[in-house]
Image 1 (cartoon, one colour):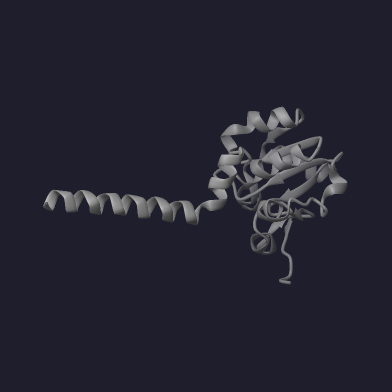
Image 2 (tube, helix red, strand yellow):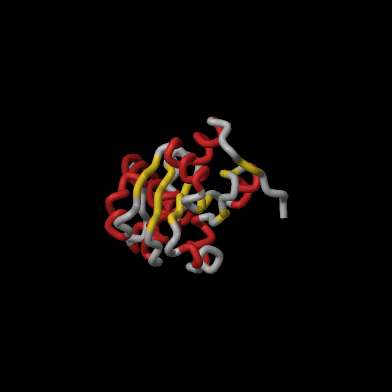
Length: 164
């Protein structure tokens, strides 16, 4: 009898934990089930959608900015963008696209080289956004994996935005 109660408690805890996990991570689960999520390790999948997709280094990102050969897109949350971003970068949080499925803000850049970045090598927002952009017909996408942490640590040109 005691053993049955213990097994029942373990099962209840497992079920409740699973339901809580599914509820709190519902966006991730939805994306995973719909095959929309693109993790940093899956750059090949993004590359198949946008043949010109590449991962660039800090030095290459700086060359793009200095040469004016690319538009930078910050995939981080708007509050992080306000705190500091690559000089001239456009704020386009990946979460905004996931909510609206609208590219109105950057639709005119489909034939422009874009460099997408986020919060560093452990952040997948830039590759996720790059995947969405590729699906939407953007032709020349690069991911700067070092992102804002590497850029700001190097002391490269940056700016802050006033709070709305």
